Image (spheres, rainbow over the protein chains, first blue to last red):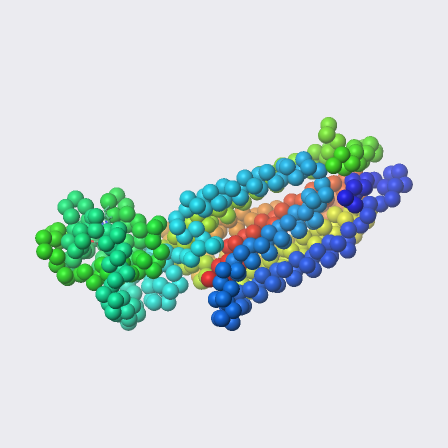
Length: 257
Length: 218
């Protein structure tokens, strides 16, 4: 509460003493905040020490968040003086801040599964890109192909397990429309076992169709409920169905590939 | 708290020299301009809260264009973060000097703050330029991605706030130079500008951590 006399800035008028200067505190705080910033920046460097990095996997993100809350509090509390200022100002600032945080997290929890800073990731991950997956661009064609060798390798890996993971996902989520054998159902899903595709039969195209769905049809966008790994595995599985021509499957729709 | 209120009323008792109607105290004995600034900053919390929230709402859902990790460069961002942090220190020192009846020192600190802020904006312009031309991160149109649109909107609005702050700082330093704004009662004008400036800094603290740093953890 040493700031009490601060408002008395009119020393000159009545020969009052000038308010106590806070220069020193400001400079010290500046140094502290810089150190905290350096620590924050240093954290990603720990990646260079894989054992430590993965051992403390759960710690890094919360640590960064705590440090930023500290910086936030220091600037608002000391530079902006809110800590020692009137309750009215505190109320005016803090209540909308709380409201903003509340809506931030509310929006976040409504958001697709991958709500972010804490979650894993992307519908398309860096791994996908490393595997040669080319994200489709509007006008660039949705079937930007996977680099062949990468695709072959990933596909072969999945094949070793009989596409078990993908099949599991398919059984859980897709059979209601595409039938257990992928043959499709009238009025519902198309046949995935022939050589005909409406949206492309290459892996990247399948991935995109499955991830984004086909708007205006019953085909849902699965990226809202599956991470990219699941999407990849189920794409491999669907790719593996090509040409298996399930008996009694739906007729060819789209172009032959 | 009542001690503060008394002090503020006490403050009010000192001469009205005709400058700056906004610096007038209201019926609560508080400077109108300061009360208004805190209310405004409250609304700004909602504003930036929704921009940052929107960014995360769509985070990871771009199916086209580059990903955050492909475009962010930790080097440039750290430098500009550091500049903005330092500008908060110079701003606080400016307010302090003004209260200490040292207008020319205050003016110098204000100019230093403006310079740091302007450099921050400069870096941001460079960053946007690089993202757009080299990394093909597009804001709007057929090649836009969710990441591009939400990122540019969020950081663009922040940059605009910094720019407005820089203009305000420059004007304020001119006013002090010309003795149109004198210490004493009108120190509150500098203080309020400081509140705005520090707010812009804290918004960046949040963006820097959540948008940039957490990305580097992945």
